[in-house]
Image (cartoon, rainbow, N blue to C red; front, side, top):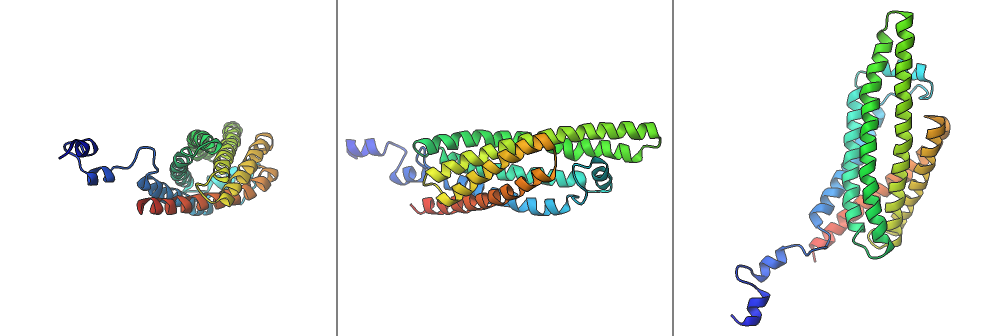
Length: 257
């Protein structure tokens, strides 16, 4: 073996071995595929969870809402399911953010920041689901089973106080969610990692969620907040589906190179 051959293929390695090692800094197909699958499952999980969640009473009317929630036998399970679905979406967005961060220029920077806020979204949503799915239900059950007028009033005040904490968490969840969609959407829109129209949908969803966060902070679970959350959710869902399909296709393309 010549000196040149030894430098190109050190002892114990071969050309085939080096080809099997993924180049440093390159997008990894396995991670992209995993992110696309987990993120897609997370989006799908939210559909049955939303259908199982009681939503007939006006959420800002605590008395009516608490009566409805007291009759739900799967309240905690639904909120655990919502948390699992959101966590899967976060995994998908982190895979996306990792790829976006490898872009040059502003797009890469936005991808890094979007990855950071994605982690914060998971943290705030976890606390919100713990408050809503466990603490609030326990307080409502105590209120519903109270036997005296004094206990009834006291238990309601406790439950309503927990409800106020839930509203505060929801407001900041929307703010963080909006920031994440805006950052990742702009990163996609200014780069070439995914179709730019998908990024535009994400950025618009981000603006909508930011507005929803401000409205929720001031009015709670009001009709005004719902009127902003709904279109933002639709745009956000389009963005999520679009990016998860895109990174799946990108993973397939990278594997064939």
